Image (tube, rainbow, N blue to C red; front, side, top):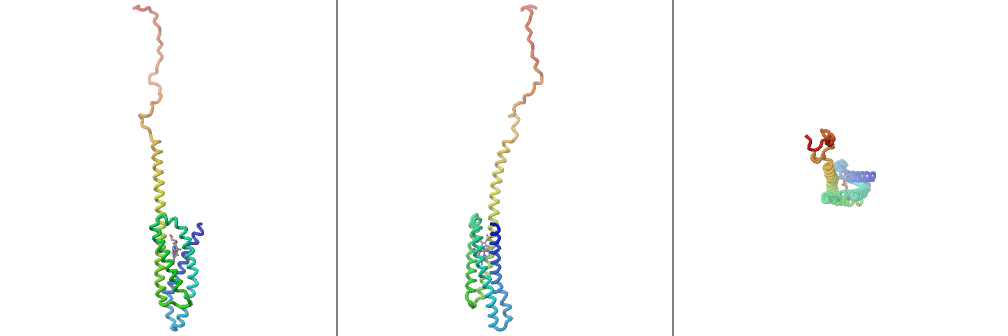
Length: 207
Ligand code: HEM
């Protein structure tokens, strides 16, 4: 169904934007501003508050990624099968690394306190998610290219069939050699006058 296809694609992209964008903000953008807070306890308090808000965002986003990702997979599977080596070679890593990134996010956000080296983990996970998006971009290009190639192949097959039919039809309609045309039934140039044969009245032997 077209509407559901569009909605699921939208859900997948929206969920990815929220999950990756939020992680990027926590890992890269926020720390610089947090350093403006001199009180370390207060700084950690702010960080935990932001982390909690991110957690409330990323949990629904993960659900969105899983539901829409499964839907997209089922819908696109017949297309992937047109060229399994190329499509599955990208779909598999996208799925596995995506699940790994989701696992790391859940592990990092579990509990009320920060993990040791949480920022390093967060940065690594952002890098991983960038790779996941790169794989998705490549997969989309390869999939669309696979469809285009299949169409081109089909069109070429149809074209050659049409050419064969045209050739056969053309041969039947081709002008026949003049020698093969029977002569037209025209009137002879010199009219044939019936000759009246008059029996001779002279006796045989007369001069
Ligand atoms: C961190 C997790 C993930 C991220 C950031 C992510 C991101 C993306 C992005 C940006 C796209 C491109 C959307 C488009 O152009 O239509 C995409 C496509 C896709 N994703 Fe994910 N994804 C993740 C996890 C998953 C999971 C867990 C699954 C499977 C259950 C999945 C299955 C798919 C499929 C099938 C496509 C369509 C690719 C195509 O156009 O052929 N993704 N993903």
